[in-house]
Amino acid sequence: MKGVTVLGSTGSVGVNTLDVIAQHPTKYRAVALTANQNVARLFEQCVAHRPDYAVMMDASAAAQLQQKIAAEGLAIEVLLGADGLAQVATLPQCEQVMAAIVGAAGLLPTLAAARAGKRVLLANKEALVMSGQLFMDAVQTHGAELLPIDSEHNAIFQCMPALVSGRSAGLEACGIEQILLTGSGGPFRAVSPAALVDVTPDQACAHPNWEMGRKISVDSATMMNKGLELIEACWLFDVPPEKIQIVVHPQSIIHSMVEYVDGSVLAQMGSPDMRIPIAHAMAWPQRMSSGVERLNFFDIARLDFEPPDDTRFPCLRLAREVAQQKGTAAAILNAANEIAVAAFLAETLQFTDISRVIEATLSDVSAHAATSLDTVLQDDATAREVAREHVARLGAVA
Ligand SMILES: NC(=O)c1ccc[n+]([C@@H]2O[C@H](COP(=O)([O-])OP(=O)(O)OC[C@H]3O[C@@H](n4cnc5c(N)ncnc54)[C@H](OP(=O)(O)O)[C@@H]3O)[C@@H](O)[C@H]2O)c1
Image (cartoon, rainbow, N blue to C red; front, side, top):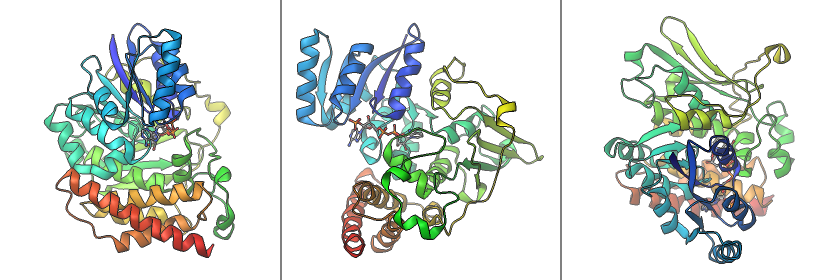
């Protein structure tokens, strides 16, 4: 029986992870669940999965959860805050840690899991984008296993020879020419740039193929998600950004491809359902069922491809520029994006100003060599402050 800690269990990836765990009760057990403030959902999950620990970031939410757990007579210890997250990411009874907290908040517990030598199931791309080399070094030094959950990176992993999966031999040694990173293009793929000014958070979150949390849904709508994924892929597969081509594929049936020097292209396909990469990464190198609907190629009938439009989606250009740099530029980009997306979701910033906030922040905040976590966190904090100023300035104009 393998113990799994699910960081961010109440979110979209977290719920899918618990679904996969529930399908394999003799192989996996959720040993710890965590949430920010969603007491009702975390309590439901505690009743269903009986973990050893439940963690909440918010003190009053933790107190409410504690009361409900006591009233139900459950033997579950409730922990609080960042210390609680770090504790459950490193438990001796936990072999795998699903990193499914959204945003920079996931960095420290995910890094703690890597430092404890766990199998890290990485959905929280922001953690790797921010900390890059430091994170990869921690994985290497502490003998952790890093398995990608983002469907694109999981697809790339599946299309690579076992040796290179999870980085080691290098692309050239394996005869890989380039990576083709696919993306649906999001809900505004075909919307005119002029019409993007007035889009609402609900429109931005109505993704055509995937049901996801609101932050990543907005990232998909701006295509910053693809930009963050580009940076993530560079670290995961030890590949320079120019070896990664972004391919817009509106049906989301192909989840990414690897092209070899002999002209062969391997693609991983499946229904757009996160339970596929989750089940794959949990069971790897074996396979196990995921409960996902099978593809019917006669229903699909056609697959379309087009190049990305950097003019309509400036976030993609910004992320590609940052991917060329080392150091804390990616942490600055990520921090500015988190602030701008939160402001858009709170309806204090227009959709088209998200990229403006990020570009202005990148130009105002100097990047440094990412020699320590403190440097990364310092530049993250500075970028958030500067981005908030740009949000206030642009929001006041809107
Ligand atoms: N959704 C997808 O299909 C998908 C696909 C690929 C990659 N990802 C990546 O996976 C991560 C999670 O995405 P999601 O869509 O599952 O997000 P989500 O639905 O918004 O869930 C986020 C989870 O993180 C918790 N959380 C939020 N803020 C927190 C904080 N400050 N400290 C600790 N926990 C916090 C939330 O708790 P509450 O419920 O209490 O707020 C929730 O459990 C993101 O990095 C995303 O880019 C997602």
